[in-house]
Image 1: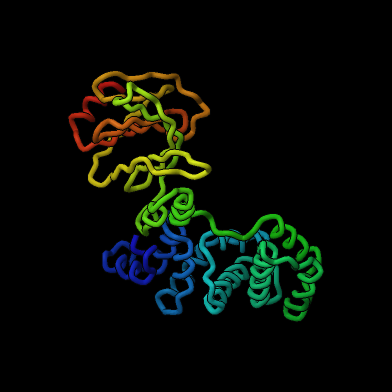
Image 2: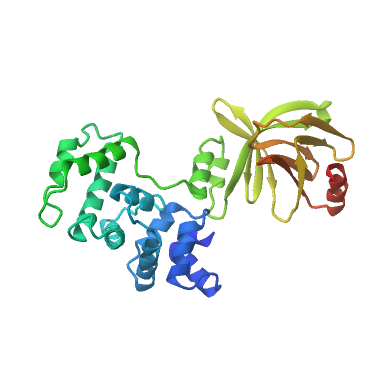
Length: 328
């Protein structure tokens, strides 16, 4: 994903490729595309250039804040990206948020500056309370005192400020998880050189599972492993003292994928041409159930709602046709 590597280069490429070409389309893209790094989204919203400023305005206008508590609206807004570190960028973003909240709820505050000032105050409170290194947390009385007279010279009610303090104390403002951040966290669980190699802008995490491998060269010996499935590779790992050692990596580039649905049961395929091990389906199974290495092909079985979806990955269409006959 070019955007995750460089915001401006990614935006330019999408414009040149006619993927998205207007600020409203970019705003929708930033808000809904799950593969985007939330830090890059925040960086994009903070760029002080005409086209990017229009993206910011369109992005903020996509939120409906009518009749929702002020801090709940701010939480919802901040969950979609990671605030950039520069004060000027934060100011531009929060100013647009304040304008939209005031448009949606004109009677809550006396002036549009009030939600803007309060947003800064809540962001500071959130950082102060949830910073583990901070030994002297901001108290309720200090928070209330800090916000005296911000509503066009008038005080906001203590009850109003106390309720916001309680909600922020209980739950931190934080962006929703994104694929890039998830890959970074997963890389920290892996021993060896793959920690750095795993994290690339294009890579997306799909799912993980506990698996059983059957090695035909060891008389069918079963081994418990962990599988991480990404958009371009399938990693097989062995648990080791709370982390994982990489046992195998299957590149998915250029392989053909076929989908087959099996109701109420799951299968483990061994050798593709020898036999099928058949077990009853457990309704507690919610992730990938099992896979077996078969030379250049693999079968991965995963649950989807009340059915099972078998995903057969192979570069040989004839093998896929043979396998399909076992499931239909």
